[in-house]
Length: 55
Image (tube, rainbow, N blue to C red):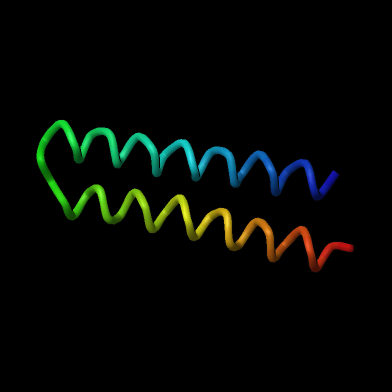
């Protein structure tokens, strides 16, 4: 059950990061794009760490 919630949280955070990158591209805002990339990469890294610790 815990692994499923971690996966859902990571997917939501990655989706928000992708949305931030797309909106930053539309507005020509490199800062928003950078924050979106950091959010997506950070969510994946923390998700992998949480899943590895759960085993």
